[in-house]
Length: 572
Image (cartoon, helix red, strand yellow):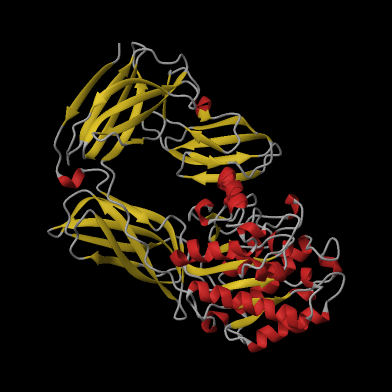
């Protein structure tokens, strides 16, 4: 028999949980700054409590650049349970904090989004020397936490769908991550290549001293001819570049349509030339100019900046292509000189063309020099494409789940407890149970309050839990049949070791640390068998391992209680 109870109690509004939620920006967001060094930080979200104003501030982060912005009213007459506002900030990185107020007093707790940046955003285009053309061991992740990308490796099934369809529907979401050794650069590239090195150089206090975000549309094996033809719907045949989905230009179009309007963009960094030896100077110039024009037409921004690298070295420099690149730089408005990659000779290339470690390091330095060159002054002269306000989010969910946990009692039962801070049209909760965190079955229902703006506490007792560890989640069902799922929690025997709570194991894409009794994960670190840390997450119980090689690893989990455990896992 499953036993459940419902408790209801009233609290003052200042103690309610989950009253306000930030929908945008995501953590680690980078807004492109303008020529004056500032940007508009757009903020959207939802709220469920009675508030009449929304305020926000930007707090500086220890050891990182920035100038704090104190509490500022961003919504003066809050209504409709959704909000949109903005702050203006100078280059740096901040923790964004938002709160609601009623009659001059704060309502509930403030909400924070960490690592919101104002800095520089770049889109990379080109062939394999812009994407990746070496061995994994030749690449490094960024040392600085201020170097960011969109990581397509975080969801490989989604990325594979993108490669097959070429549409923005299958892009990785706009959730920046640090550009780590196993991270890619969305929408297209799966490796950090030379760009992690460039990022470290750019964020240095001796260079730009602001966070950076990279996108990449680079496609190994492509050239400017295919990019031009796919942009203008001119069919071509190729062994692996699919014209039917308008590759390779589709990558540029998708980045410009899906990502750039939210973040803004300083410039497109172009590295075509090596694969274009069959073109005349005029053919290369014409195709490049038409691609530049297409990006400006489709973005609606005629000043969209391009930095064109002089890049056509293949066991020597192709003088024909070099002359075409020089013509583009000198004749087209808002096209600037990029890195002089022709200066990297065979010593920096493992096959006379593609960069080795030395070449990657040199290329990163050359791109840094091009971007920071005072005589060109990209930061002042390349007119930034500025971020646009995001759409309003949908209304808040009908039920806000403030907490959900469980524990094993002395009678061998698992007692679950969850608290909602608001409910609307809430019919019931279905409790689902699993012994492997994969296959769940319904084990009981608890009737919901229906409509409430107060804290409500629910309990459920499971008299037949698994022997060692049992996983639970809640399915919340509205009166109209619509439903949402909660996160997974784990309840264990007191004698069960914590390290059994890493699941699934073996794993292919993502691992999760399930905790009980209110435990909070402080950090997860993954080590290879040589003891080298290859990944780390903080303040999260999830880790995406899809970009790692197959094999054995050790995971170390540190809890807020100070407890630390280590366990071997297998990456499939």
